[in-house]
Image 1 (cartoon, helix red, strand yellow):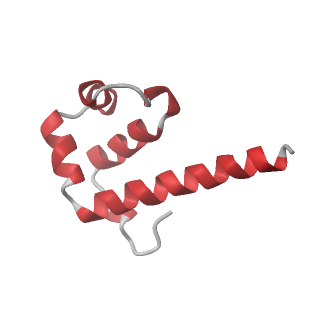
Image 2 (cartoon, one colour):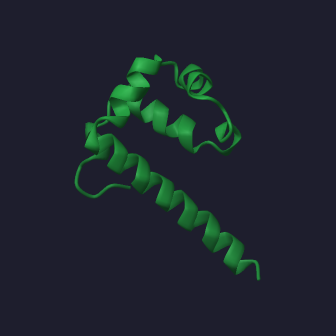
Length: 77
């Protein structure tokens, strides 16, 4: 979760994009396929990545997801 209010400033399209990008099953999909999953245009995808608050929210959520799953793996040993 982003602490500076970045996540609250995300549009519904941007939230769907982040969700689609972080879904493991979408890892090897093309940008067009990601856009189909997120129900947005390629232009919306590129506009989102041009916004610093979107990039920050994406990185933050990706890091949190990684930490959560890495912890589970580490605890398994």
